[in-house]
Length: 237
Image 1 (spheres, rainbow, N blue to C red):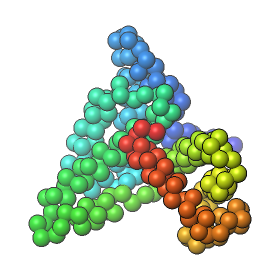
Image 2: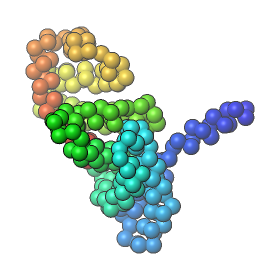
Image 3: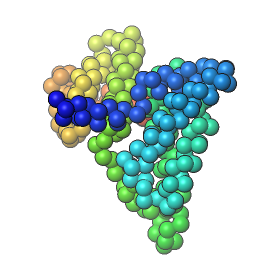
Image 4: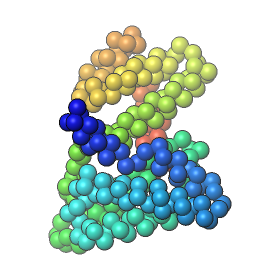
């Protein structure tokens, strides 16, 4: 029993950005009372931001950046300055929004650092090398949660596309391909290990369409997905 309790304590310790913190951020954006906003920030938001920045720094290996401790503190202050820009009505959770923004902030610092490395190496090669070094993903709480929220939002986005297709052209090839994609994405961890040919094979089996028909439909959805991914990376979703 004691060992189980210890395990439980260890697990809950990692839940640094809970619904309580999400709600505090939402309330902060709505409030016009300076005293209330100060209380919400000190009690809930500042500790969550501090832990978030530290977790991302270690998860994505930004610890090798020069003056990383100073950069961490700078990032925490910067998150405070953009706190009021968060809009919960856009559908994105505060955790996802500020995680993406924090990661992109550090990636920008990586690219700035790359300019100071050997002149004879092209900037593009340096940036690529540094990003591979610093953005090695570990299967930790932060990354798992971020991925889970990404797949959740993507499925919701695809449901919207499906609704548009059904309204405009029910039972079309596009509609059938969308339904098949949703079925595959219901188990995203399995999709990640499949190669391109295997995915096409599954789509053919589910839809009854040939490869050319599927490819034509996927072309349209790639444009929609690119827009979704861009908005996700910018923290708009």
